[in-house]
Image 1 (tube, rainbow, N blue to C red):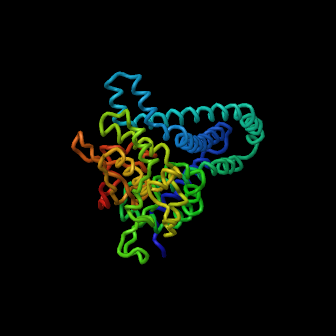
Image 2 (tube, helix red, strand yellow):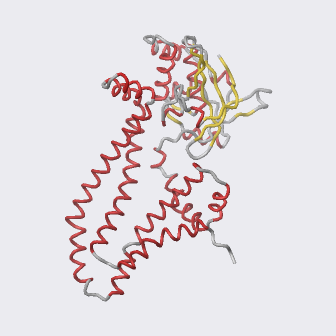
Image 3 (cartoon, rainbow, N blue to C red):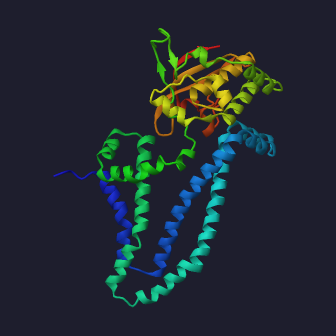
Length: 380
């Protein structure tokens, strides 16, 4: 006889709790209204989350440092300084405000629909149902709690899948892997939703989009990065050089100059998911590097890094390309970023223009939390 899996048992308990409660309490218009509101609030929360993420990616993230600077300039020096140094706080606050605003719009709309339509129907039916025997009321109490139980169960499976990444534990992971119920719900519901078109708007950072190949038969014993040599990758032209000089001409310090370059790349170069997919399949088309990224305004981590190197070379600032592992939010994957030397501060700083879509990665104090440095593949 197969041993009972604890994850299976947990999911069954979560699913059955609301149903058993519905049977015990029985049908009443009050309980049905509460279940409807609870169900609506769950749907509203997830819809608001998706809409907030889409709006944030389109309007907040491309201009987040400008937004942070505008807000900080209107506050006193101490608070403004904190906001500038930790801009993620401001961005999170903006996301929360937008989400709350959207949630309240949905709640007002659904309250109008409920009061004018749904609840009137329930109140009208309640009189007839009260005339039925108790077993009918218990049965209806069970039926009307099923949608709520389904939603709660799906949320539980989603949280279990996240917890396995955030708090890895071999024993728990083994239980999850062996859970028949979890894997069926995850495969049929959670995974298709999380990989759907809508969820592509969530700031995904990278998708194993960095590949290194050695001993290429066409060029001899030379290392290729996403299909090109490192020197071809960082190759610049007059347009790139002149643009970098013009962009930073009013900046005084090395830090300000590099941050200006960082802001421009992170705001104007978009992540190329199609190219990332081709690289994962080792389908290279030799169009990687700074010039390609600058002209097409898109690329993957290697392209972002090469472009920053080209910019820095144009204004005589030393820089490196670093390779290693980056945490995508669900897993560690091959990644590339930069280190830049600030001569007036006599220090190298970490800069990741690819990750900038999801936060502030310019000399960030917690940079090492989602980056593992393995090697420096070039310095210029």
